[in-house]
Length: 117
Image (cartoon, rainbow, N blue to C red; front, side, top):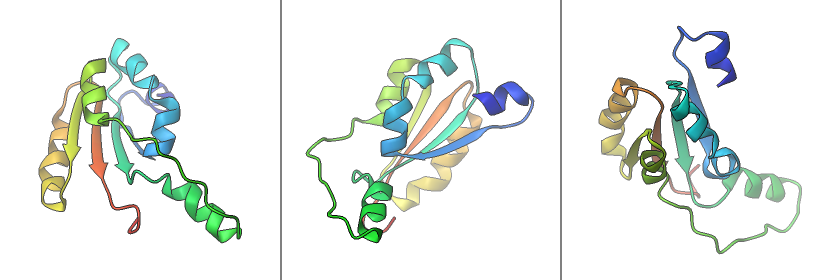
């Protein structure tokens, strides 16, 4: 949202993982309340992959969680934004076009394999 405030005429795209978005997901309601047209691409590997890879690289045991991510596309819709799910590679082009065609804030929830990311 800071990038949008600095350049409201320029398109703003945020890219996060499921863990990062989970820490700041309430910011979506702020974007909706103020009509901030941020486009968000959320890569959901359901594994907090970045943290796990950092732990492996440092030689630490990897912690695990039994938590299950919500349907982030549905969450976006509940907040008043556009929420677009992607479960297969074949859906990505059309879903990306819908992301950039949406009015106001929009979120593309890309389900990914945690082993491949």
